[in-house]
Length: 255
Image 1 (cartoon, rainbow, N blue to C red):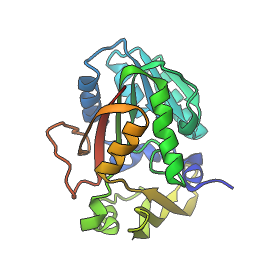
Image 2: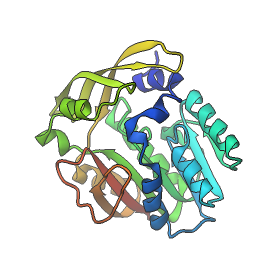
Image 3: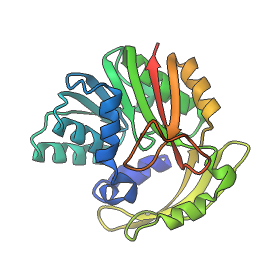
Image 4: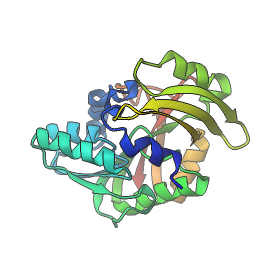
């Protein structure tokens, strides 16, 4: 039986690139460049690369050692198509973020817009992604990612947030409930796939509080962990995380 994220991304690549949360790529890559010191020869791994928007933007800026990996064949096919259209040399691979086939191979790893983390069925599976990222990085390698902010639903309605940020033609959050005991939000989402077929799926996503993320990263072998508010398209170290940030932006160094 397919998990909800496998069902969603089985045929949702062109429509995915029209989602409102994919519109901040350039500004997000500005931040990524700063974090890796503008080293255009750095080996960079994009975990859960999706349709390759960050890979492609970085390669367009002259970065030459980029590898993108994703569980969805449809998303990867679109990523390859876009890269070929721009004549960019990017290595795209099919794979599971919980079992990355790399050992201390990368100078940096990125995992934007969740990239698999927080989507898994169990906390243990989500932790496997962090451990897998740790194995893939060289000592001193940087890890930059975003994840759902557990402080947000303590003071805000996820349903209202999704409704206010809804754009016609995008996937639509219909209803949901946040479980304070597990910090999981269970919801019903309606969307139209790339063939125009309307679908309804039940999803479950894990929200994390900063202290959890810090502990998990330390346990996975990271140090120098810093957490900020993730503002769409304008990531910045000056944005202190608040309970009104839907996502948090995390940076860490492989010990």
